[in-house]
Image 1: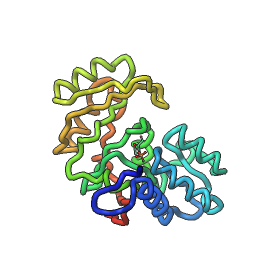
Image 2: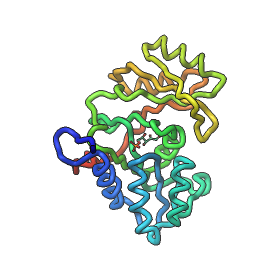
Image 3: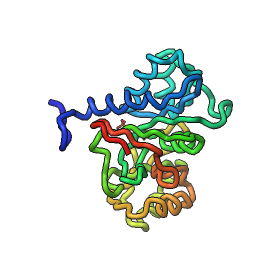
Length: 223
Ligand code: 5RP
């Protein structure tokens, strides 16, 4: 049985597909496109494959997406060889009305943040249930250097979060992830700044300093 969203009759999978396909309009001819990670992005990659002759290649945020892109005949390029990007398309785990995001459910948050930082336009693709008033219901992923895991966990507990070590998971960068429960992120910019300063943290999966530029929701909304 498919899961229905409130407010419309499209199921979540159909919304992911709709959002992924809608992002194609932002792809620039003869450009290199930044490509994120996840089940929504997979639909974008499927759609991108149909116009692959129009682009020069892609920079990818994960080994998983790189494999998919190559399987579709799309060249995957090293970001260092490309420099900056015009457009980056990626999903999110939560999105607030100011287009600030929680990302990293798929574990690719650090590379995603790097690609977002070098991209002129960040197009975020989500289904409607990812849109929230205040970020924090989805556990906030934090990538940590393995030897700092318990130190970072204690620091997060001191700040009111409940960190859970993502079991049996190693990021593409060889690090670990703490998923932080119990948050109500009233000031995402401040939290991103402060937590990024905890020694041993590689990246906090909060995209507030660099939010998305446009959000495409699978129910047809955009903001
Ligand atoms: C991966 C991410 C994804 O964009 C996020 O988890 C959303 O994934 P999905 O489209 O599968 O719901 O941040 O690190």
